[in-house]
Image (cartoon, rainbow, N blue to C red; front, side):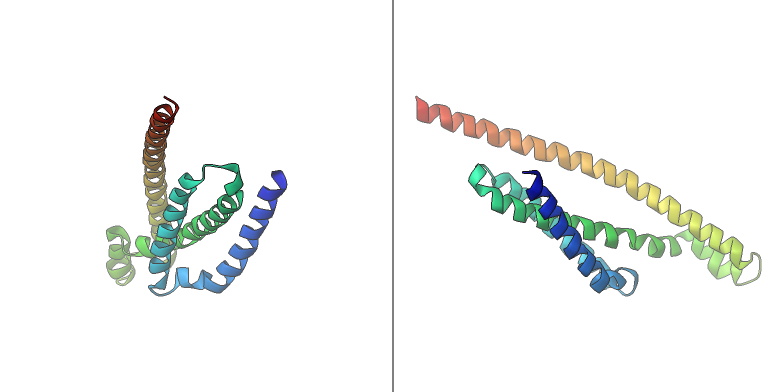
Length: 163
């Protein structure tokens, strides 16, 4: 079992390395990164829910494939998600004012502007992390409630068949 997990993680790492080298610049430049983020997020969700279809030990190969796809898509979403922070910070009201008024008219120097932008990027990252954790908790609760519901249905069908 442990060797299957190691092989799966090795495959994930190899694919992500090639993928990030090939697509990594799309995260930082242009509008293509946000579409990749959306598509990869949907792929991750779909294959996480597909894991609920795994019921028997003989489905191990499908479980490994679902795991690999989910792991790779999740890792990629983190890359594209984090790449959005600088863009968001650049257009926050405080940073825009500092760039378009204060820096432009010499009220602050470039180093002060850079500090304001960096501070805003950290702020955006902190808020994003908090929302991400709340979202993770809600998703966990939904997944748990769905899986408990499936278990109740399975137990009801089993009891009907055995009676």
